[in-house]
Image (cartoon, rainbow, N blue to C red; front, side, top):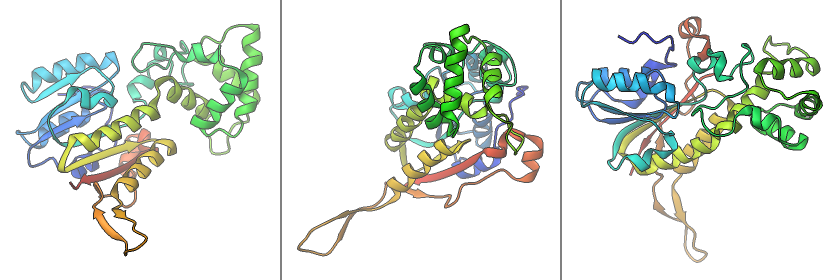
Length: 305
């Protein structure tokens, strides 16, 4: 039994759109607490799942699931962008649950949340440069561009200026320090959200190269999915969703041969058939049980050729 406090978002919709009831090989690119992997394995006794996670804290759960589903589940400690490096067989489905998990957010020492005071870290793989390093070293312009680009924060220049002024007096080492700096120069949003939310999102995305990871994973899916295989992606903010949407549209459009002396001739069908014309969002029941699902959007597609 899975006693994890993490609740998989849009679980039923993920399983339905993966169409994994008939048996096959599936990739759970964001293993976390194993909610999707477990549900896929339980959908059919012939299913096999390969779970990826860059976070070392997921390894214990992953190794335990290898024991529970001997021969049917394997855990790989790596980024999902490296799926094709580890897998040399065509798969029937890939699922990606993007962003940061509730487990990571709720652990103050991981430094992801403005709600808890902890080290200003934000590294999913717990390696490399942390948010603290960037906050205290980037120029004011670099910080402003980062916050605007990855946080879609209109007041990015004001926030960057406040950060630079504050760090002259003393280094910014904790999430509480950074949140206080932002709160001092930003009014509370009318929608009740926290004015530090967009800046924290921007730093997390930048520290972990989340959009680059997603782009590389989407490209890998083209090579890994067999004809008829499903790609299911759950995103949590507009940058991710836009990237997934554009990727699917680009690869669903038929290629045509343009000849100035002859009519337009279709030469190749699109690689994907889009299943979800509009993204699937959580219903009222799920939202009442799992507030994290309020911004979730699911998009799915089927590999055609």
